[in-house]
Image (cartoon, rainbow, N blue to C red):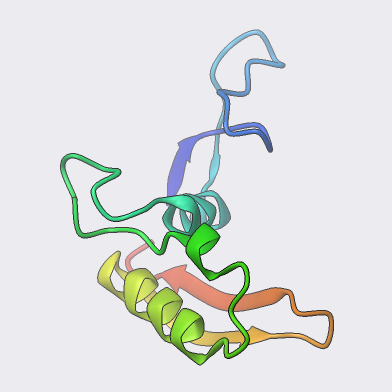
Length: 97
């Protein structure tokens, strides 16, 4: 899937002087992780709200929620895990693209 490129801060990337279109699976995953329910008017049920999981000691619910939200957005999810450093690792991509 392609979309308009964003900077790491979430702003439009205009570094080339114009809008850039790039493969956007990772960008969409980031958006879904950061969004809370109700964030997207057209899709109010979409979003993980990852900030709400900051002090969680059992990550299983977070990992299930991520997989559920990615799947609902049309991604094929092969893996959602935490690595030894506590970082989320995903293997998910849009099937039709």
